[in-house]
Amino acid sequence: MNRSHTRLRLRRLGLAAVGALVVVGVAAGPAAAHAGVTASDPRALAENVTLSFTSEAESETAGISELRVVLPKGIAPDAVAVKDAPKEWKLTATPDGYSIGGPALATGTDAEYSITVRQLPDEKSLAFKTLETYGDGKVSRWIEVPANGEKVDNPAPVLELKAAAPGAKSAAPGPSPSPATSSAAPSVRPSAEAPTAPGASAGTQATGDEDSGGGAGAVVGVIAAVLLLAAAGAFWWVRRNRSRA
Image 1: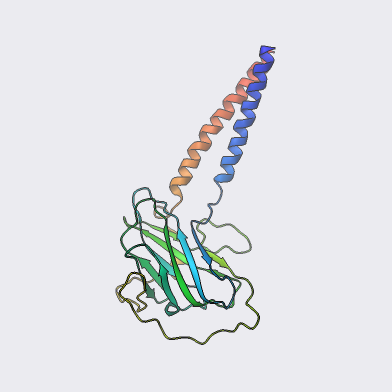
Image 2 (image 1 turned 45 degrees about the vertical axis):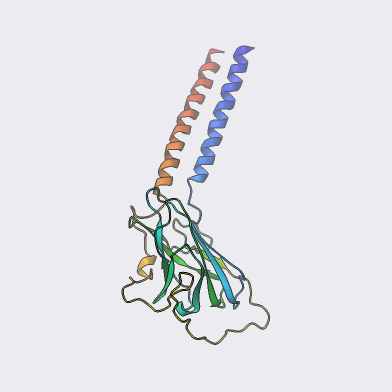
């Protein structure tokens, strides 16, 4: 009776270990988006829309100090204004988008900010390729745009748009916003000293030691190895006790 009970417990232990390995295997797949975007009015041709961005902090040694964004086709750099951002962060227009940054955030703090866009283009989705720069100079590149439902390792923030409202039309270009000195308003004049925002060259493969996700993959690998050893041990005990029965 006791031997049968022991075999049952060992069998359950083995099944639990195998189940845990399956969970870890799923978690070790392509990472979820680490930079995201939402809209106050996610419709094509919507006007004066607030876009809210979140970039997850992944470094354990430094905080995010700058975000560089390539605007999708149909949104001009001078059609963007900052609405809310971390203290002392400022927005500066670049030839193909904008940069927003300032003093590095505390280590582990996500970078959250919002901008207003004069009008969204008549598209089904908008991708905002983003480079995250940390205070120690390391860069995370969220610049890959999934196609045909495929998964990518470094996905760019993508905003899905609904159909335009009935009668909506593309508005005529308005005047460029005037520069302001407060941290809550952007400087829309392209800075000669500002490096080029991530364009076509930034959309290529991210470099190995600068990209995020490596540390998390290592941790998942260690956990998977431990669980694999536990599963192997449990399987050995089940076979050993079954052979003695």
